[in-house]
Structure formats: C-alpha cells, structure tokens
Length: 150
Image 1 (cartoon, one colour):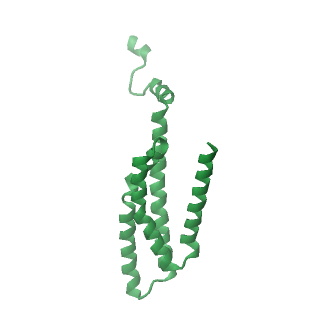
Image 2: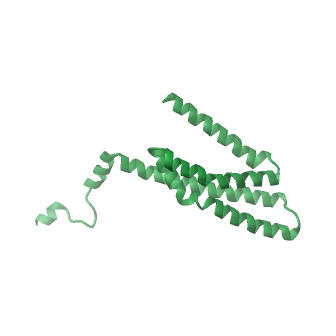
C-alpha cells in the first residue's frame, strides 16, 4: 500500500514539474512544441491504460478515451487556426503562445474530468451494496406497494 502511494506521489511530482516547465519556464515555441508532443502521445497512454490497467485505473482510462482521442485533433485544429492568425502579423508573440497553453490546459481538464466521471460510475457499479440500496428506493413513476394493494 505504501509503495503504491509513493509511486503515485513520485508520478504526481514529475507531472507537476513537467507541467510547470512547459507552462512557465520554456520560451514560446519550445513550450508549444512540448505541449504538442504531450497531446500527440496522450492517446497511446490512454490505450495502454485500457489494455493493461485493472479496476479504477482502467475505468479512468476508458473515460479519458472518450475525449482523449479527440485531444490531439482539437489541439492541432486550434494550433493551425492560431498559426494562421499569427502568421498574418508575421511573428508569433507571447499572447499567441499563452493561447496555445490555455487551449491545452482546457482540453486536458476536460479529458481528466471525463476520466474521473468514469471512475465514479465504476465505483458505483463495483459496490453492489450501494447499487442494491439505490435500487431498493421507491421510484417516482412506480406506484408504492400500499397504493397498489388498494
């Protein structure tokens, strides 16, 4: 148990370090190239998680696949539209780079959110006691047993 927590903490620290590097430390074009690389590699990581993970991790990856497969396509579409707008001016400025970073952050939050929703649904389905308790509640559209007997 403690090994899993340490692995998770190490992975979270590495992800936070890479994220801070891509968003705050690297100059414009390097950051855009790094974010594009992450967006292109995301589907491979998601599919690997679907195939090799089990339990909540697999549910998370399946949820991410719904939007994660569209992550590179949406990012490339946004990137090309931003490049068309910025090349009309003749150079890429800091504002365009910030737009790339914000677009990537929004797409990443959407992808992770869909994974968390899938994990929550898995958690409900994995606990039969909670599911049975919810099924035992009377439904609004069904008549209660007392009114059916009357």
